[in-house]
Image (cartoon, rainbow, N blue to C red; front, side, top):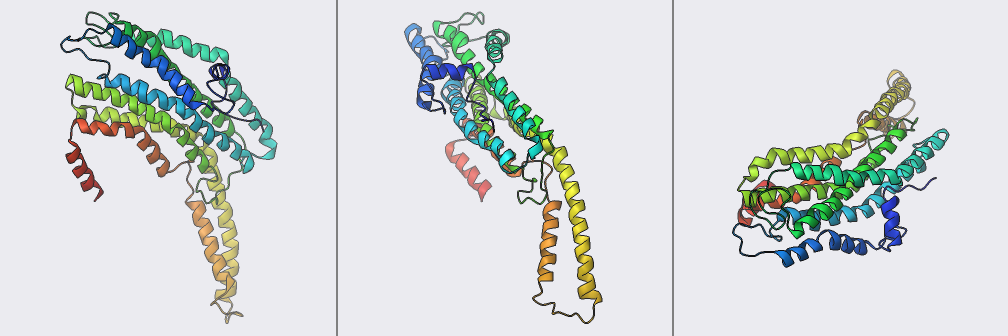
Length: 384
């Protein structure tokens, strides 16, 4: 079977290999982290220290810019580290389709073709070049269209969005594009992964409705979605930085963001698990067929059971200790498993874990409203 990796490929990966920032299997993570932070964050600090003018009243300093620190010291490193997690979780998930014979033998060529198509898109130079162009076109347009700068900051002065300091020029034209490119690259990987799964969902899959995972053998897809948990955490960290800056420096209330934060968590959980609903028609059909098949088997068994133990008087055997009774119970349990089969390859535990990963960076924002002591008391009351 063709080897599959969502992250081990593409022009940037090859560039990192030549620069000795990664190995053939994503080694040297510390080098990549140090290099990215040295390019995206450190120059802003140095330029701000060199060109800053202390003593300006109301000026937002570099270290007090919570949004920037959350972006480049939390979100960006997590997005880089997430490659290892995605590789380790998604690669085995693809192998399970063949290992567990979910993809039938006659469909293996189409399955291989789906993998090869995903690999080609992952390795596409024009696609990554388009991402880079979009960062320096659409990205700069978004920066220009954002709210005006009303008070002096470490990166710009009032009077216009382009009244940038030296640190601000690096921030706008180097640091932000790096973060945007890394994010867009992850969104591209989302697209590649779900495009691959869509092609697999169109195959004549061998789904077993009595499978103990209650998802006809596809529950591993819901677990594989944990590979994207770090990306959700990084997105949550960026939102937390934005909200914290509004609360701390603009006097806005944390509660005024509750709908946005709730919608944010729901949107990203849906974005990760929602595409897996493409397997629902196949799973629903497998459940219907399973119920019909096991009902037919059960009917034949209970007819013979009734004839032997109810209509045959006196019975030729003792009911107590008979294997027929245990077989009837086992058959009932099997039918209950089919009846309880989900029509989606994930459960509430998968939803809650991804939601927790997204919301975790938002939790410290409670300290902007409650003191640590009051927050502990409230948590204790909730738990107990």
